[in-house]
Length: 362
Ligand SMILES: [Mg+2]
Image (tube, rainbow, N blue to C red; front, top):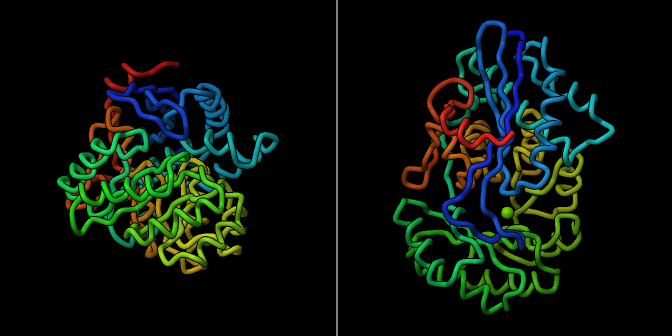
């Protein structure tokens, strides 16, 4: 179980149709893919995926350098590996860039560790269930026309989703935001929850107005209404609204999560596996969130987050935003709105090697 080799590639998969998110055009999904091979022939892999090519090669180079530190370690020693990487690069950390570079290696180690003992990741992490409710999140961008949005909501409902989340824009009027939520609800039909994401693009007075209006319109979830640093603003919204205020996908560290929890800034915590630095810190943050009696969700990467959320009793919903379908042979797909882990030990995912080769841009 000794790590003999670590390799890292940048894999950029062009999109069939682009969209706008966070004010920027998106045309591809960029991966930093790390593979770990042990002395007894076990291979594990992990990746991050971001819809931005900027700095992706720099992250990958950092992953390569950190990966070299893992050679000679036992693949079961995930905590030691994480702490070793964090200590080695602490002058550029904690958090930020460093976590993105560490995450592919940490996920690859957990995959290899699961394969070493023949157990799926959700059991390695505790084992509570093997599935979790999913919500549809792809192709619900604020850059869609109303007709396109209604059609996309209808398509998601036809595919069995019981909850959808649409992004709302920065510059729309309150009435326009409500109209988008209403069009999505009409497209999806009865029995489908409509959730919205403000993507941290509003100020507090606007968030208060739009939050109330969306609540009155039947929306069931208000995500990232203001910047994650504005703990007082988030706490006031959480207190003022009946529907849950959700967020935290932009937080990196255990301490940031503690501060957010203590401020009563959220009703539901959303953890980003890459931003927190992989599976190893994800577990600790999820436990912290549990202490505050708060449900936990996952931001993107549903194929791995399904394991993490299935492993904990307070797992709530997984965001179904598949960005790596093309490089996998077996991207899990929800059935009747429920996502089940891929079969097999580790995360159970299998690379499509031909596609990885085709889209590698080292
Ligand atoms: Mg979000």
